[in-house]
Length: 394
Image 1 (spheres, helix red, strand yellow):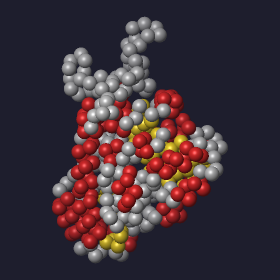
Image 2 (cartoon, rainbow, N blue to C red; image 1 turned 120 degrees about the vertical axis):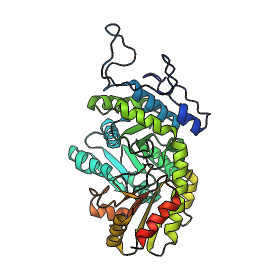
Image 3 (cartoon, rainbow, N blue to C red; image 1 turned 90 degrees about the horizontal axis):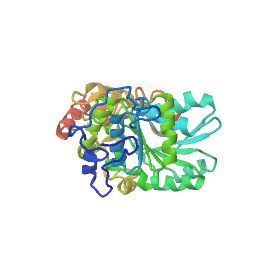
Image 4 (cartoon, rainbow, N blue to C red; image 1 turned 120 degrees about the horizontal axis):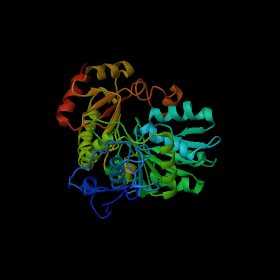
C-alpha cells in the first residue's frame, strides 16, 4: 500500500479516472490481502531502535490510513503531493500560516466560502495580513489587483454561492507574471469535472466534507500540489499545529472517492434537469447554472469544466420572504448548511453559510438576500422537480 514516503503508489496517469478513483495510491494489504486499507486507529508506533522507525512515529505527524487517502487524492487530482486535514478550514488555515507573514497581501475571489472570508478578515488581519476581495472573473480587475505584491491569488471557481467562474488558465498566467502563487478551491467540481493543476494552478484546496466524501459522514480538507517545496511547507505547519485528518474519517473518505466520477456525472445530469425546470418556471426570477446555455459564462464553463456540476443558485419572485417560504416548504430537499452530499440540500446563504460575510461584500459579490442555493443530489430528478414545484406553488 502507499507509504509515508510514497503516497502515490499504484498511480498511473495513463489510467482513466474511474480506475484511478478505485486503485490510485493504495494496494491490497500486504499482510492479509485485505482489499480495503486498514483503519490504523493508533497514536503510537513502536520503533525498532533509537533513530529508526518504519515511516511513522506519532499520528499527529502521519498515519498510514491518512497516507492512503493522500495518495488517492493526489492520484485523482493529478498531483504529486497531498496533505489531508481535519476540516476544509483547517486546510485553508495551514495554507495561510505556511505561506504568509505579517505585512503580506492576498488577493481572493469576491464570492468565496464564508469561512474563508472570516479567517482572512477576522483572524489573520489583526496579525498584519492584508486581503483584497475582487471580481476575479474580470480580467482587468484581476490584472490591476496583481500589480501590487501578493503572495498568492486564491480563487473559487465556480464561486460559492453565485456560481460565477474565473478563467483558471488566465489567472495562472497573470499570477505567474506577478510572482504570485495560484490557489484554486476545487471543492465544488472536484477533479472529476475540473483539473486546475493542468490549467496552471500551483495548489488545490478541497473541503473533502463535500463531494469528495459525498455522504454526509465526515468533515475534512486537503491541499494538493506538484511542488515539493510547497508540500514540505504545508506538511511542516500541519504537524506544528496538529491539524491532520484522523484515521477513521480518512478511511470513510477513501470509500467515498471510489465512486466520485460516477457520482459527479449523476449530480451534474440531475442538476441540469432541475435547472431547466427552474429556468422555465414563471415564479423564478433568475437562475445561475454553468450548464445552461443562458449562463453568462457558458463558453468558459465548456472550456474548463467537464459539465455544469451539482450546484445552482436562483431567486424566486417575491425576494427574501418568498425564498424563505420556499425553503420552509420543501419536503424531499433538506434545509441544511452544507453541500455536496448524496442527498439534495437547500440553503439560504445570507443567513447560513455566508452570514459572517459583511453585507457590502455580499452585495458586491452578487449574493442577494433572496438567493437560494441548491446542491442537487442523487435522487431521481423527477422527484426533486415535483418537490420544488409544490413548494413554488406555495
